[in-house]
Structure formats: structure tokens, C-alpha cells
Length: 138
Image (cartoon, rainbow, N blue to C red):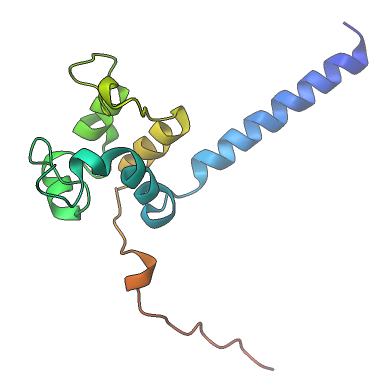
């Protein structure tokens, strides 16, 4: 392999590794990262509509979700993470019949969110605006 080609390959691998490390270090935010996934892929069966709610599990509210599906700070013990990682058609979520599977990046975000403590935040529309602190003026 020519020296130039091996340098390019090394550079690309290095950039990829740095990008992965940066992604792992960034805090997952519920309002920005998790709510859109739950809304798109989970709320049909586990959302606010009690008439369509499956397994009596609502992922739209923090308390019920943490009581039955999420162990904050421990992704390995979280039922949500176990189900989204499962390959068993009877256990996996979303079920194969839904035909709207989670993307690998979405699975990783949900896993990291649970591992980082599964912090729940209000929708931005319900957060009162706050003025930022004034900068120090010399």
C-alpha cells in the first residue's frame, strides 16, 4: 500500500474515532433527542391516548415510564432498553408488525439516555422564558 494511501486511511479512522468519542460524551437531552423518537416510534401504542395504550405503559409521562420501563442510570436493567435491543419478535419493540423499526442511532440514543439518568424535561412550549444573566461590564 502506498504511504499516501495508508496516511489517508489512518486520518479517516482517526477522525471517525474522535467523532464517536465526542458523540458518546455529549449529554442526551429528552426534549431534543428522545421525545421525537418516542413520539414517532412509540406513542402510537404507548402514548397519551389511553384507548390505544398497550400493556398499560405510557411513555408520554415520566412517572409511569420510570415505574415500569426505565431504570435511570442503568440501561442494562431498563425494560425499554432490553426490548429495543431484542431480536425476539414476541419481545422486540417496536414490534415487527408496526413496520417502523428504530434506527441504530435511535437505539443508541435511547440506551445512552437511560444510562445518563433518563432525565425528563418539559416540552419547550411549557418552559417559562428566562433572561440570561447579564455579562460583567468592566
